[in-house]
Amino acid sequence: MLDVRNLSLAYGQTPVLADLSFSLGADEILMLVGPTGCGKTTVLRTLAGLVRPDAGEIVLGDQRITPKRDVPPEKRRVGMVFQDFALFPHLSVIDNVAFRLSDRGPAHEWLERLGLTALADAMPERLSGGQKQRVALARALAHKPQLMLLDEPLSNLDAALKDTLRWDIRTALKEAGVPALWVTHDQEEALSVGDRLGVLNNGRLEQLDTPEQCFSQPTSRFAAQFLGEAAFVRGHRDGPVVATPLGSATAITQGASGEKVDLMVRPDDLTVVPSRDGNGVVEWRRYEGETRLYAIRVCDGEALRVRTNHELDLAVGAPVHLRISSEHPLAAFTPEPAA
Ligand SMILES: Nc1ncnc2c1ncn2[C@@H]1O[C@H](COP(=O)(O)OP(=O)(O)OP(=O)(O)O)[C@@H](O)[C@H]1O
Image (cartoon, rainbow, N blue to C red; front, side):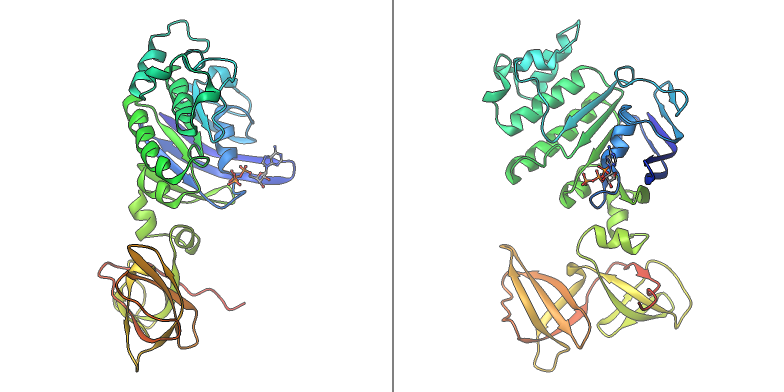
């Protein structure tokens, strides 16, 4: 169990974490995303005890940590997995995993669970990136941590390996029954692997919710734009419905009829068909294999992205009709004041 309350931290005069609060359940995995420099690694470093916060408290199991009551990193029982694996190069796999353990049983157990038994006596230099990361995970879990911190654990691995390993890491964390905080830059990973997702912006949690809620019901434009390819179409409320030049959709939030709003649309909320008297033209196209992504310029507004089946083959410059086809409610935001 982890409880973070009103954590603040500045490097010199630069505030990095601002009144950050969240809790993690017994075996909950929280994915942490946000733009570069927003403080993700600093959150992990603070929880690990590598930097001391200026204010707030961390309750980790039965430890209560405050700026005045520090607990050193080695007493926090926090396991860490980094993108660069950080194995001891002069120790074999089993000696890495069992490092400083008086009982080597859990080391053998985690090697087996993570499919590494045959490599127990190998030296790290012989291992592939995926195997190194499994060893790093086994080492962290064999030490029976009360919290796991993962800082972009898959970013040095190729795409095919990432997909398998992310699920193996999730399974291992759940088997170990430890809460985990997992920083990633990968949207698919952020949305698919964790139990909850936190969107960090300038050291503040902009949104903390299930991945589904964060993606489909972002509470701010920032969260909307950070997850997935969001665009905004100006419309007017008419009861629960927002009417736009591209058709109508139900809005998630209610407001006064007649009020101007920007409706958030993603490429799968729109449908495009060829049409001589349509409302737009194809500005660019991108073949994606199973799908195609088109940018459609509508009147003189911004180009909107729409994803279609790969069989719809439209040329650049082709006249088309673009409409909102989403059957689920869409997020609506108050228009930003003109610059
Ligand atoms: N030791 C330090 N001294 C001073 N400033 C630091 C230090 N470490 C990080 N920073 C600054 O704090 C801010 C947050 O850094 P942090 O590494 O936590 O961001 P991040 O969200 O993990 O970024 P990235 O996604 O690029 O890894 C950045 O502006 C960074 O330059």
